[in-house]
Length: 106
Image 1 (cartoon, helix red, strand yellow):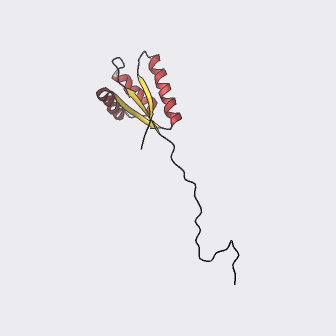
Image 2 (cartoon, helix red, strand yellow):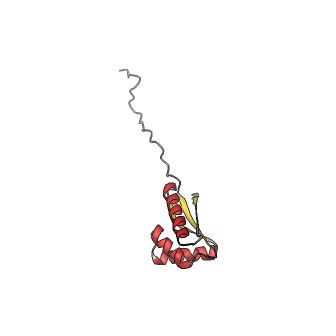
Image 3 (cartoon, helix red, strand yellow):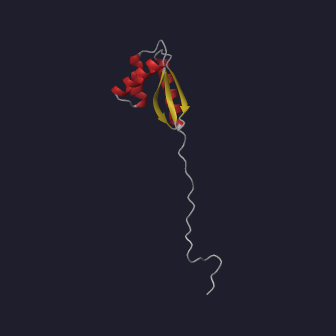
């Protein structure tokens, strides 16, 4: 009995699955300065990053002690939007709080 070219009897064929990689993630970094109050940084972390009071205080202390701290990690668009909103809010309150985003390298 002959087989047709496209038929096989004992060969398993695995379907090729497309490789899906995770999109890059970006950290929103807050920087220490000599003018922005600790209370304001805690407020920003509560309001814009959804941090609890305890989490916000811990991050604020890291910013104060180390000169910078991660407020959150998001997709590029979300991180960019949060950085922009925080900067606008800080300027409206006359604070020079600096927020930047940087890609998280796994």
